[in-house]
Image 1 (cartoon, rainbow, N blue to C red):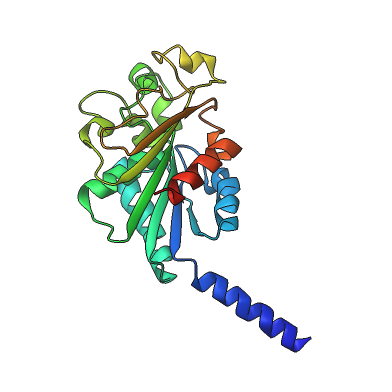
Image 2: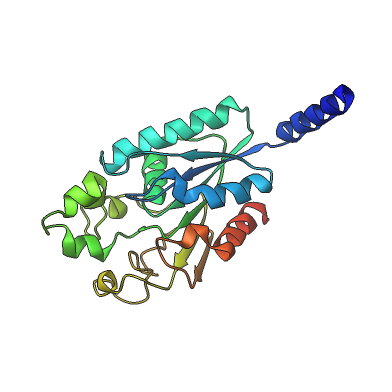
Length: 228
């Protein structure tokens, strides 16, 4: 029995030693790391080391959140001595990555997948930011996600890293969709999810709040990490 146990431990150690890629997961606004758990499980099944960062998205502005959340993820990945670091983000999480990389370098960075990112901002914020209670519900970061030239998404410019974007085309929030021109996922338009410099883009019939749990979205994420 002890010999069998030792063999299992050695096999386990070897598997972890071969996991050279770490994936940092960043959830969206007013969500938690639990929203990314299904995606985390599928990535781990594919032998990625995964760091699912839980950050208080409604407490600080975008620049502060970017430093806090991404530094935490990088520290955990580097502690595991990985060779490459990737990101999968949902919504606001994608803006945190762009903000961080506008000011800092990640030498181990390989690829990034953004799910429903407001890369050009969201017209929902434009329309509702002055409504009482909006800031209390969405925090300082939520107030920075509009489409004007003074909002953070429009200040970040083209991306300079290998980025794949997955946009949603279905909405379960018909009220918010009335503020969004064209095809949208209930929070972000098909057009707004795109950004200059991205390597790949796909639109799928998924909604903003649930896309990270969708099997096709997860499959496309894994495909982007393993292609070319």
